[in-house]
Figure (cartoon, rainbow, N blue to C red):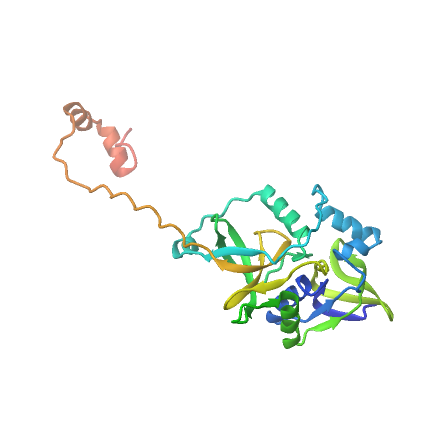
Length: 296
């Protein structure tokens, strides 16, 4: 018995949850944001007692060290668009399992990380990092910065973006458990002041940590800043980051000059000419007519 049903359910604080909600709303789907109570800190699973939910999180973070969650500024990533040659190329980038593990660890230890229970099929853009590694980027928008050198809090800006899109928000909702059906995440139940609140998610759930008060989420600059969700290819984890311009791709090496074709007056060796001339009549007949001479 569901109290509410949406396409995407975003659970967490005003950075990761609202960022994923804005991306989902821009895709034209129905979204609900469930924010935790003021006393909750860290990832939503930190306050969960349900065994099935805890087992799900344990499977996603198996083998990762229990990294501390220090206060951190908004990460900035230099990226560049793909060149025309890179877009035309059919080469598949190599898969590095260790790289995904490192990325998961970075997202879990960041107040700007988030987790998708499903790898979404929303349109993303492949870009290259400063070390020429491909990443998936989904631009959320641009923050207009004060010309006087001031700053804009990222959480407040994302909250404003969600308000502009009329995204529904359920406040003071503590995650009680995730609901599974045949191993697939289909919704979640929250503890609220009015009792349990069950929400079905047709597409999936996004989970993000609550940003501590000590985290500096101010975005600074002289003009504007581009905010995006960034993820490694094939990962369920993403992170809210600011995009910066990376140096252009190096020019490909010049192609070696192709060898020119030229005529040759050389003749076949005499022995080879004689061998071809002296082929048996039977062989010639088989080659020309497809069958041996009559009577053979």
